[in-house]
Amino acid sequence: DSSRRDPCAMNSATRNRRSWPNRAMFKPAANWSDSPRRILIRRRSLQRKELDAFVASNRKGVRLGDGLVKNGLVSSRQLAEALAQHLGMPFVDLSTVDVDAGARKLLPVAKQKEFKAVPFGIERGHLLVAAGEPLGAWEERELAALAGKSVRVYLAAADQVAEALHTEFKP
Image 1 (cartoon, rainbow, N blue to C red):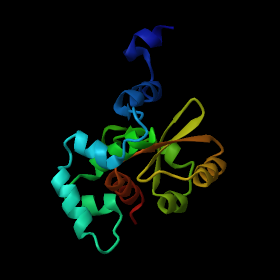
Image 2: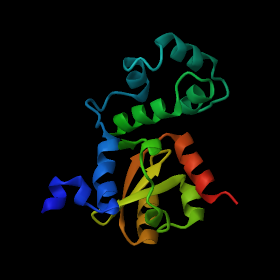
Image 3: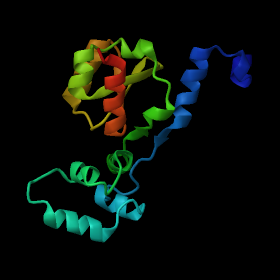
């Protein structure tokens, strides 16, 4: 097949389908005991002193990740990458992916907003969905039932997911 060797011979849909995996980051956890905290510190995204100070001052019970992002200690992307590595989930940077409009149409807007999940492509019969937080099994089953396809969930930066939902569906 000449289209496998010559990218110019492929149509745009085939090129997009073949190119998105190169932009998605697959980093399964090397050690399941690695917590997102340790991953952030090891990647030098966060200093141990900053983490300890935040934990000590967190009297309101704010979720650790949300508090770290809100206080500017880590970016939403850094947090999502660490969480994806911890959970053994794939990570996708939505700023580098061309979102497939056909994939977006497979799920109702209300469900995309409810689950904070953006369909961004279709590959081999699977709907590819970027989520700002890990989805539960029942949420994945509901999305699959609505789309009529199996679903593969990728973790993405929460701010990128929110932006994609806002820009695509603003009135």
